[in-house]
Image 1 (tube, rainbow, N blue to C red):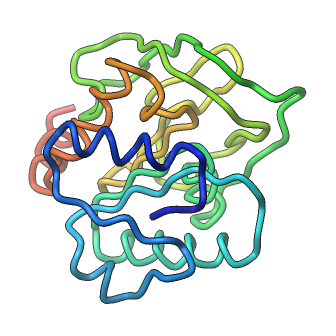
Image 2 (image 1 turned 180 degrees about the vertical axis):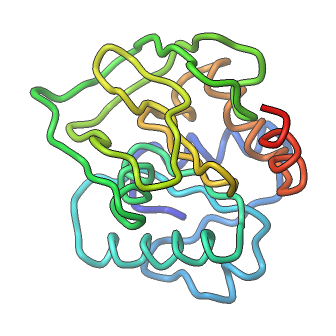
Length: 191
């Protein structure tokens, strides 16, 4: 889902490198049939706040949540997941931009066995409170909820931009692409 982020081409490049079939659809052109026919959804970041972008993303999030469809929200995508499902966001004291280290606090299907990642950030807001049934997977000095997921559904948010984070970000995107609902549930039952 293209929310007109300048980094959407980077997401496409990551998917191309992984040889994953994908379709880029602008937020204003997405239809329920597009969601029904997709196996997974990635929500890009965005440049500007807009009611239309928020509304389109909220529809997608609800569809994925209700249908247990794997969903990855990146930066704004993570923030709108939190807002749509009952969490909150807050303005950062200053715009965060550049490489940072995040600490993985909970074993999860997106980071494999890693305990930390070096990631790229570019945001002025962050998730302040997670929705009910969501858990924090990773944090940093500037964001408590750098990466989070639903406790049972394959819905993930990254405050950082994996598509701009080199090898560590590629691990996150590759792991998301490879996730299956059955695998997600099996891993959750083991932890």
